[in-house]
Image 1 (cartoon, rainbow, N blue to C red):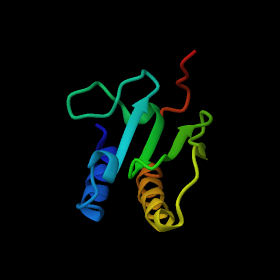
Image 2: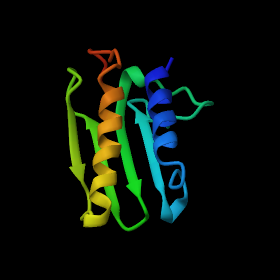
Image 3: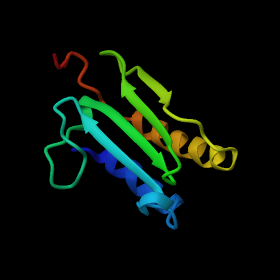
Image 4: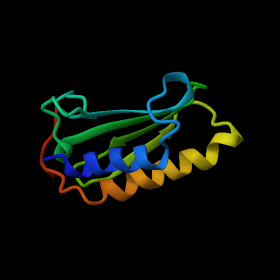
Length: 114
């Protein structure tokens, strides 16, 4: 279970070893499912009902939200604050890695909260 999300996080850690999870200086992800479980090895998180991925980079206000938009594996991508030109390439690479792994998830199509 959650192999695609685990693989995504592992690839991001390999690609950005100097920046991974370094608080204000690095790359951080918050990943939630529709049951509000946050991805971790210990939680009941389920990638099949993925709801939200928040990408935070370098604590400079750069934040990208990727959220499930429908029952058909369609995602809404929003840039919350301005992205500095020097960070744009990194953010693009992060989004590319995230997208590569999202497309492999067998989403539970008829699940909806609320």
